Length: 483
Image 1 (spheres, one colour):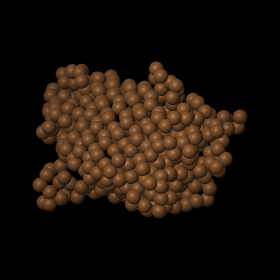
Image 2: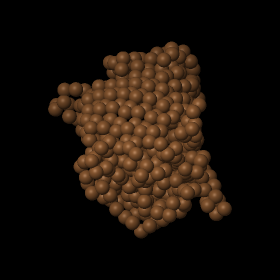
Image 3: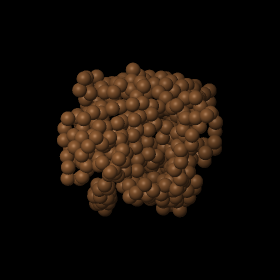
Image 4: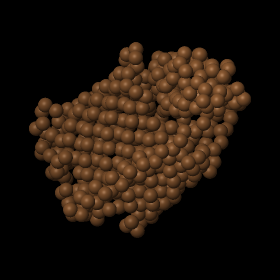
C-alpha cells in the first residue's frame, strides 16, 4: 500500500510541476521599429518571400506557417506567431539558421521575409560507436574493451527531392553486425497531413546480455565465439499531422529473433515460450505534442508523448503483452542565459514478466537517473523524473569561410551551459529477484553538476559529475541531451 501511494504521489506531483507554469514568448525583431503599427492596430500580410531554399520546396516551409496573406492580424499577436513559426521551421532540421522579418510597408500593411540557410543534406558517415548503454558502462564495467565497438558506414539523405524525405542506409561490423534501411516521407497528400515511413533491419551478435545480477548486465560469449542471437525486423509507420504541434503515429511491425540453445541453459526464461525462436507482430499508437524551441537541445516549450504497444497480434502463443508509456517534459526559459527543464517518464508492462529482449528499466536509454549510469534497474513499472537548471556561460559563432568553400560548413557555433541536476525515480519488479533487490522497489535519486556543449548541427556533449543516494559518485560523459 505504501508503494502504491508513493507511485501516485510521485506521478501527480511531477505532472503539476511540469505543466503548472507558462513562460511568455520572446519578441521578434522587425526592419524599422519607427514604422511599426501600434499594438491596437490590425495589419494585413501582403506577401511572403522565402530566400535561401535552394533545394527545399517552398511548400515544406509554408506548411509550418500559422498565418496567411490577405488577412488582418493584431500586431502583437502576429509577432508571437512569427516567433513560433521561426522555431517550427528550424525544427524541421533542414536549416542551420532561420530568420523571419516583418517588412513594414505602412501602418496597416506588411510583407514577411523568411531567410533560411540550408544544411548539407547528403552525409556519408563513418560509424565508430560504443555498443554499450553509455560511455560509463564501457569505461568502467567493461574495462574499456575495444572489441565492444561498432564500426561501419552510414549514408544519410535528410531532404530527398527537397520535400523533407529522409533516406538512410547503414552497414556495420564489430560487436554488432547490422544492416539497416529507413525511408520516411512526411507528406503523401497535397494538404500535407499524412505521411509514411518504412524500415528493414537485421543484426547478429556473438556476445549478448542474458540477464542482470546485482543491478549490472551479465554478458555471455560461447567458447568458440559463435553467433548467439540473430534478429530481423520490418515495420511500416503511418503519420497524421492535423495541427502544427500534434502528431499521431501508427506502426505495424514484425520481429523475428532466434538464439543459440546455450542461451536457454544460461537463462531458461530468456524467452518465455522455452523455444529458441521468438516471432511476433506488434502494433503501436503514439500521440506526440511537441512545442520545443529546439528538438535537439530544448530550452523553451513542452513535449508530451503517450504510447501504447501490443506485442503479439493474431497469433499470441509466443507473446501476448501490452506496454503503456508516457513522457512529459517542460522547458522554462527565464531569459537568454537561464532556463530550467523538468521531465517525467513512466512505463508500464501489464504482465508479470517479459522476454528478456523486451526488458525495461532505469539504465536503458532514455530512462536513467544521473549517478546510476553504471547500473540497470529492471522491472515492469518505472517512473523517472529529471530536472536541470542551466546557465549559458558561452555562446559564439566562428566564421571559417576562408577555410571552407561550402556555405553549409562556413560557420561553427559553440554554446556552453553549466547545469545543476537532480533526478529521482522508482522501478517496480513484481518478481522481486533477490540478486537485484538493492535498487528495485526502492526510491532512487541522483544529483550533480555538469557542462553541456552544443556544437555543429546541434550535436551535444555532456560532462557531468553525479552522486546518488547509495553514496556513489563518479564522472560521466554522454553524447545526447538528457531530455
